[in-house]
Every structure is written in structure tokens, then in C-alpha cells.
Length: 335
Image 1 (cartoon, rainbow, N blue to C red):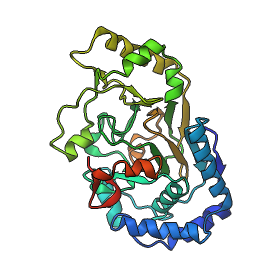
Image 2: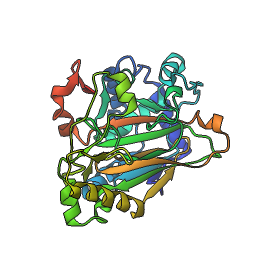
Image 3: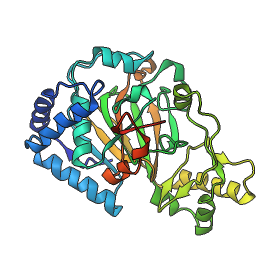
């Protein structure tokens, strides 16, 4: 994907210096951390070109021109710890002394007006998630499996899902060819007949909870039947895992097969994440995946580290889930 904005080294250095003044840990007091970042915006500490890029992201999302955007040469912590694959999140919190990457993602969320979202019993309720291979999930269907991931929405089976996902490249082996793929829902629907789309709007499908969610919440069991398509182009789909319900009509199985075929042939966008890259994209109204085209060193590849945030589309969307807020913290919801 072509970058919407490549920050100059001077702009990146300016932002890094400003973000270094935010010493509050987002993992200990997110609200105070967010407030400190907002002061940078108010005090004029954000490059004008970045503000204009944020405006364009909002406009293109609203108009449907584009729901995936890339920024390059963004601030990343200079001194990144080695965090391993046993419990990378815990190791990060123990050894990471600066919060430059977190600060930039918080800043981007604020200037695009997309409030961040976290899950209370997922990675300790953190608003900034490490996408790193975790030993116990290697080879399983999850973003923490150290390998490829099929096309999906994050948190497919859950009632509260992010509208947008943003990834920041923290540590990306430069010789490996690993791509994040993206398909906008509207482009996928263009491959499907109106009759098929109507069947996909019926609650005839089931998607199991992901393994990370089941580990975090043992009460999660079976999932209710759901439609795959809702609204204009909102999808609820995990390829190879979403199936027709046991009592679904034959038409539902045919529609699911048509969707799989459409996903194979629809044009896709792809981006190869590098250190300092930001990829921000729609979650509900799109599908994304991860492809490993070429890996030079499989052990080193397990250290690939992206920092991820979930976000609502706007403050109204966040407020719509106020009843789900945990501990009165906006954006922190139940699993």
C-alpha cells in the first residue's frame, strides 16, 4: 500500500521529544496517560502535516474512499527490550521504560477522533496490545500463533467489536516478507448477488470464540447464531471457522460458499509492516489477514512485534457501549 504520509526525520524527532515528556505509564493509569497526550495536541506539539493526514483519514473513511491507511517513519521507542515468547506482555511491562509507541498510537486516536477500546479480561485490560508470538498459541488460529492468519474480523464472536484497528511496527525483521492483507466489505459485497447478500443477513451462522478469549474467560461456551452481513457492509466472519448453523437452510450453506469464493477472487490490498510503519484500517466493515511469503530465520521471526490498538468510530459509538464500561473507565468493556 502507498503511504498517506511519510514523516520527515525532523518531524519524527520532534514528536519523539514531545512524547518522551509523557512519563505516566498507560499500563498503570491509562486516563492520566491519555490526558498528558491530549495536552501535546492542545499545546501545538503535533506537526501540521500529521494533523492534515488525520483529517484526510477521517474524510476518506466517512466517504468510503478508503478504509485502510499507512503512515511511515513514525516514532518508536529507541530502547526496545527483548520480550520473548512465553509472556511477552508481562515482560514488556517489566522492562519497557518509555512509552513512545503507545503515545503515538494514543495521539493518532485522538486526532482521528476514534476513542480507544480495551477488554477488561484480555491482556489485563490494556489499551495497547503486543502482537507477538506466544508459545502456547503457536500453530493455533490466533494472531499470536507465530504464523499466518486467515481473513477475519478481530473478536468475531463477541458482542462489542472495534470499528478500527491500528498497528505500529515496533520490531520487524527487515528480510522477512510478511504482509497484512485487507479487503473492504463493500468490495467483497460487489462480488455477491443481492440474493446471496440477503441470506447472509439472516442469523444462520455460528463462529466459535477464539482460543485467547476462552483462556481469559472460562465461562465462554457456545456462541449464538448470527448473520454474517449487517448494516451497509459490516461483516462478522472468520474464514475456515464461521460455518452454517446446524439447523440452517441449504440456502445459508450456499451463501457461505459464495462468500468464500468471492473472498478468493476479490482484489486485495497488502502492506508489509516495517519498523515505524502504522497501518490503520476498518475492522467491522472489512476483513484482514496475515501472510508469510518468505521467512529467512524462523526463530527470529517469532520476535516480530507490532503494537495494536482497538478503537470505536467516534465518541457516540463509544458512549453506546457505556453500560459495558468496566470500573467507570471509558473504552474498557467486558469480554
